Amino acid sequence: MTLRSRFGKEMDDLAKGYTVSVPFDQRLYKQDIAGSIAHVRMLAKQGIISDKDAELIVMGLISIGEEIEQGRFEFKEELEDIHMNIEARLIEKIGDAGAKLHTARSRNDQVATDTRLFTKEAIAETVTRIKALQQVVLNQAEGNKSVVIPGYTHLQRAQPVLFAHHLLAYFEMFQRDVERFQQCFERADVLPLGSGALAGVPYPIDRDFVAKELGFSRVSANSLDAVSDRDFVIEYQAAASLTMMHLSRLAEEIVLWSTAEFGFIEIDDAFATGSSIMPQKKNADVAELARAKTGRVYGHLMAILTTMKALPLSYNRDLQEDKEGLFDSVDTILSTLEVFAAMMASVRVKAARFRQAAEESYTLATDIADYLVRKGIPLREAHAIVGRLVRYATETAKTLYDLDLGEYKRFCPGFENDVKSITVESSLAARSALGGTAPEQVEKALAAARRTLHGT
Ligand code: ARG
Image (cartoon, rainbow, N blue to C red; front, side, top):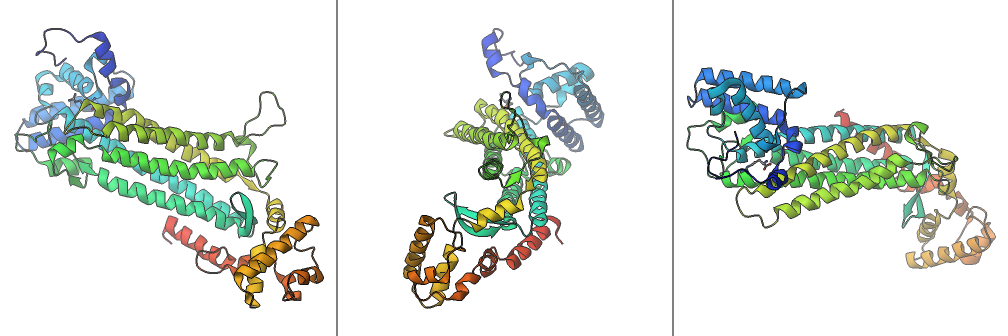
C-alpha cells in the first residue's frame, strides 16, 4: 500500500527520508487505533459497511495494538506514517475488509483526532502532576509554619515574611497553571473526525456517536478549520511554558538558598550531585536542569507558532511538525514536575539561619518609618529620617536593635521607648490585610490551599 498509482516512478530516497513521520508519530498508535475502532463502529451502525466487516476490522485493530505493545510490529518507513502503517498491516491481516477502514475518512481528520486525543491525555497527566507538586509545596509550608525569612525585592533583603507565605506564592502560580491547562482541555476536547480531507464527507455518518465513543464533548463545526487547526497544541505549549517559567523561578531560589552564601536550606543528598574534582561540592543539579529545560519548552512554543504563521487553509504538510515539539514538551514538563516534587519534599529548612537573615540587615526599617507616621510625621519625612538612621547604623556597624533611644532621638525627637517593641513578629503581625504575611492571614491561606487541593 504505497498510494503511488498516480505516479510514474518511485519516490526519491531523500524525499522519502525527509517526509517520513513514523519514527515519531508511532507514539500515537493507541489514539490512532481507538479512533479507527470508533470510526468503524459508526460506519457499521450507519450501514456504510457491513457488521461483519466492522467486526473483522475491530478485531484486527485490537491485535495490531497488541503487536505494537509487545514489540512485534514492524514499522515501515516506506509507509510514511503511523496511520498508513496500521492500515497496511490491517489489510495484510484481514484482506478486503481492512481496505474499507478508511471509508469516509482522510488522514487529515484522522491525525487531527489522534493529536487531540493525545493532548487531552497529556493535559490530564500534567494537571495531576502540578497538583502533586502543589501538595508538596503546601506540606513544606505547613511543616515550617513559624519560619521567618527575609522577603526580597531586587534580591535585596526587604521585609520579613513567613516562609509559608513565600511558598504559597508558588501555590498560587501553580493553581493558575492548573486552570490554564483545564481551559486548554476544553478547547482540545472537540472531535475533528468526520471532516474528511477538508470539505466534509459524502456519507451519512454519525459524528456525535464517534465523539461519544472517543470521549469528546463536542464535534467540530467547520471541516476546514477542523483539519488545519492546531491552536490546541499552541495552547498546550503556552501553558507548559508558563508552568516551566514558574518552576524555573522556584528552581532558581532552591539553587540560591542552598548555597553557602544564603545557607537557608539543605537539599537531601539523594537529590544532589557531586563534582568530578572538588570533593566538597554538593550541587543542586535537579533544580538547575529544571531551570534550564524551561528553555526547550519555550523553543517548542516558538517553533509551533512559527510553523502555523501564515499557513493557508486547510491541511498542509507543515502541520506534521506539530508533533515532535509537543511530545518533547510533554515529556519535559512531566519529568520535571515529578522529580521537582520529590526534590522539594526532601528539602530541609534551616530556620535559625533564615531568621538571622530576616533580623539583620535592617528589614524592619519600613516598620520604623510606619511607626513615625503613626506619631504624626508625614510618610516622606519619616522615610528620610529612617534612611539617615540606617546609614548611621551601617557606618557604626550596628543593627537597629543595637541602637539606644538616645541614638534614635538624634534623628527624630518623636522616637519613644516603644520603638524598641518593633520586632520581626510585630512586623509580620501588622501585615494583616487580606493577602499579607500576618500569621493569621497565612493560616487562612493555608486552609484555602487545602480546600483547593482537596475540596474540604
Ligand atoms: N503524517 C501526517 C501529519 O502528521 C499525517 C497526515 C498526512 N496527510 C496528508 N495529506 N499527507 O500531518
